[in-house]
Each structure stands twice: as structure tokens, then as C-alpha cells.
Length: 318
Image 1: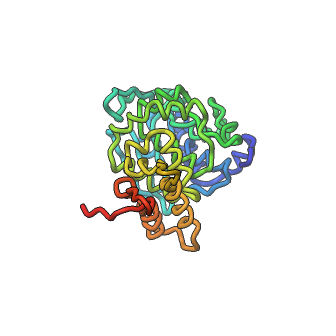
Image 2 (image 1 turned 135 degrees about the vertical axis):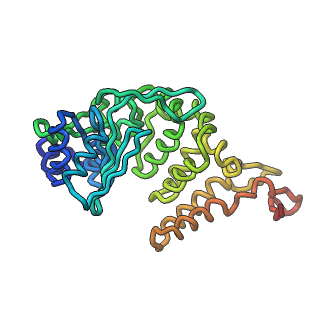
Image 3 (image 1 turned 30 degrees about the horizontal axis):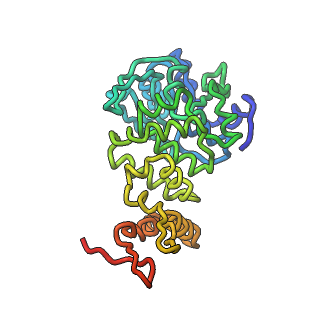
């Protein structure tokens, strides 16, 4: 990663789209900041096309103002129920949201949302490395706001939550999958307290839809080293809930001094071999990796011990 001063960040953001957003927000007398993955990826020196802007006030109004400034070639989508808006202009997409605070009930991922400050908005972010913001207003253009020292966690290669991880994961259990996904994609370590909370809160994943879990699993699967993610899933207890047949492969039984191999770690080796095979990272590669992950999925049920022969397995027809 690379460290940047506020002046250097201002130069990096010296693009027409950011100055246009700045002009609209200043004209409305509203604070606005680019946040989240776009900021994180600046420091990681990774390309990012996803621009998320948080406005202390109405993000929708800033989006409308930007659409008016850009003219007919810009397309505006407003999602009033969520208090968000999106502006598409050529290949550029900008998401706007008003700064907010959130509160959750125990049985739902859908929060009660109230208007809030920038601090409130950063408090609700999932991880410290995603809670950084850069001001776009003219007077403070390029100024980094990093209340949870996400820069230090980027330097150290750590995934940690801004607030108490038990609360963060209980509020929105999908964040547990995102935690492991980011650790896998970035090859970061999950901070100890955060990982302990993963283990403690694992059963909360049951309120998350299978479709949302699938999206995160596919992103883990397409990471440079997907085995990192599946080992974290196993150690945290999440795998036993979302893919129990795979978790069950993590066992070695002995008979007469003879042991069969640990099929879980064997499976991860096969997945890594497929991931590093000389093939493009396409949708076909995704399904090849899934095929590798599931190739021994029935071994726990089908294996048996035969005296004089040793460990063997029988095909099970369901």
C-alpha cells in the first residue's frame, strides 16, 4: 500500500466528476465525502470504478443536482425507500446516500434508519478499512477523515470492525461473510477480537438469505487463494451452518493404525490447483473451482473400513 497526504489525495481526486459533485454540494451548503471501497483502493493502489458518496443531508438532492449539471446524457435513478440515488454518466456510476445512523431488531437485517452525522455514518460501516472518507467540498477537498485508523489496519493487513464486533455482526450477520471475503481477497488477517466474535456469532448467519450468502461465497471462490476463505469459514463455525457436508470432511479416522486423509484439506489443495491452472478467470473458472470444492463431498457418508483392504468408499445413489 501507499500513504498519501491530504494534498496528494486532492491530486488523485482531481477529476471532473469529483469537482462537479463538489460544486453541487457546495451550492446546496452540504458536506459530502467519497467513502468506502473507493477510498480503500486508493491506498491499496487498486483500480476502482465504484464511487460511493455520503452527504450530510440529502444525498438524493446532490444526485439530482449532479444530473442537472451533467445534462441529458446522465441518467438518474432515485430509491426513496432507501434514501439513495445513482447517477450514471458514460462508464461512470456514482452512488449517493445521506449520512445516517442505523438500529436493528434481532430477527432482521433491515435497519431502522435516521438522519445522522458523518460520524454516525462511519460508525455503521462494516470494517475500519471501509470507514475512511475523503472530503469533496472545495474548502477541504482531499482531506482524509479516518476516525478508526483504517490506514494503520491497511498497513498491517488487518480486518477489524469499527465498533464492538459482536454488535456489528449481530446487527447485520452478512458482515461475517464479508469479513472473510475481504480477508481472502486482500490476503489480510482477521483481527483476534473480530475473529472471536465471528465464532461466537456464527449462528446469526441463519437469518441471511441463501442468495446473499452465495454472492459472498462466489467472491471468495474467485479470490487468488480461495482456500484462505474456506479455512476461515471452517474455523469460525460458519461452514458447518452454510455447507455442513463440506465441513464434515474435516476429520481423520484411524483403524488398526491406518488413517485416511483429511478430505477437507485435500479438497482445499485441489481448489488451489484449479485456481492456479493456466485458465482465464471467467465464469467457467468459477464453476471449475466449485467442481473442485465439491468433488469429494460425499466421502464422509460413503467411506468405510474393510479389514484386510483398509479405507475405501462406496458410491451413494440418492
